[in-house]
Length: 152
Image 1 (cartoon, rainbow, N blue to C red):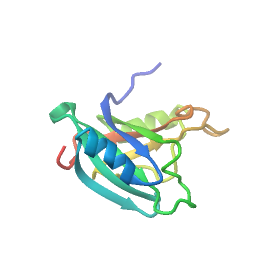
Image 2: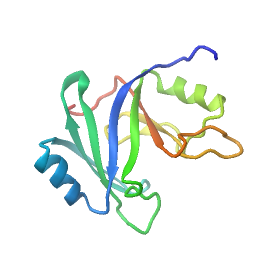
Image 3: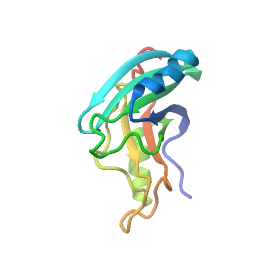
Image 4: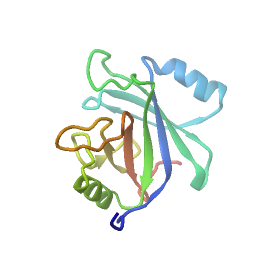
């Protein structure tokens, strides 16, 4: 395999979806004690999201609690409940170009600004004839490291 022009640095966040954030917030903030560092809404992504953090400093991991703005619309952020995993990468543009050239399918939208203010791109959970490689059932978000991550 040729030399990879990027590195995965670690887990950036885990996104958990439900029909209502109230129950999720009760567990993650109320009972487990994680604190909220932000919120995000996007009609194009059909998401109302609260951003919590576990840990601090370089070891901090976001826990994104999501509910759909409209449960009848796609994408459905409530299903599956473990919506996606976010990986921090050192060079997002190189990662997307290199992976795409090797047949990895990305979701529509390309590289764009994500909920935490960082550049992101999503590896699609399923492959197709044009792109035979995918997340094999898991939506994977690649997050550009080194950009502002709010109060994390």
